Length: 122
Image (cartoon, rainbow, N blue to C red; front, top):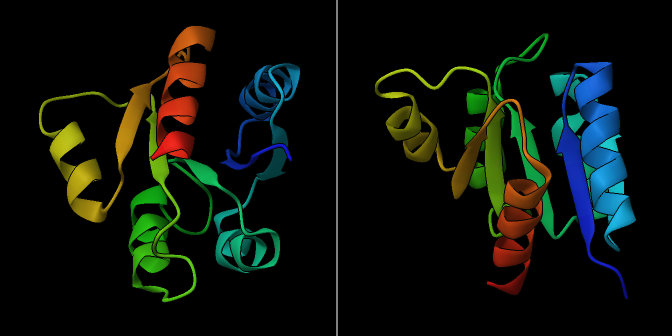
């Protein structure tokens, strides 16, 4: 059975790219564009991995990571952050929120697949 990845990304082109790469490599990719729907969607779909944009409308990706980690049903799902902001201290903030890893935008296909495969195998 294919592994499921929940892509949390508000930018349409980035969302389409991430889903296309994942689906083209054997994953089932579902997406959410609004942070307000992430927790309920994760509960419903039970993804194997979540990619989390940090800059989202309504609620930040960092806050969503914290919510997912606080949820007894979802806290074990690996999460990696996807962000255009890679300034000093950003990786530390992302990991402190509970992310397992992070990738800087623009996302390279190999890095995306390597990260997802590593987290799925964990």
